[in-house]
Image (tube, rainbow, N blue to C red; front, side):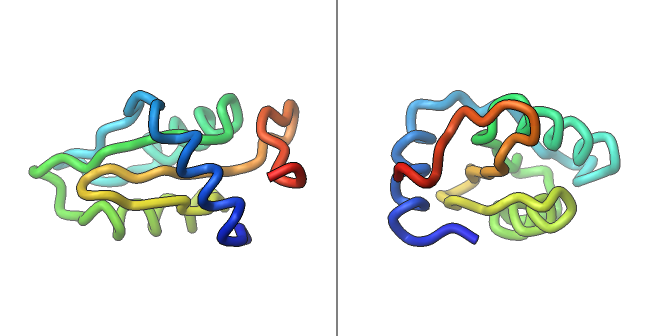
Length: 98
């Protein structure tokens, strides 16, 4: 669980990130969960977007993915959201220093 200081720092780190996933009318399937889990393992912090054709709001999609993967929702702004999960193999972001 992230504290407010960690969340704020991660949000600042996420601002310049490119959106690497888009969730559309297909919703959140097993393949989407797998791809996002792999991206989180590699990057620890990712930005995703919910398209207008999706049945989920950005908050609903972020919460569903975070629960399925065991990640933390850092922020939800409009149609975009940030997810964070500490990498098992190589830590890129040290939350202890935040």
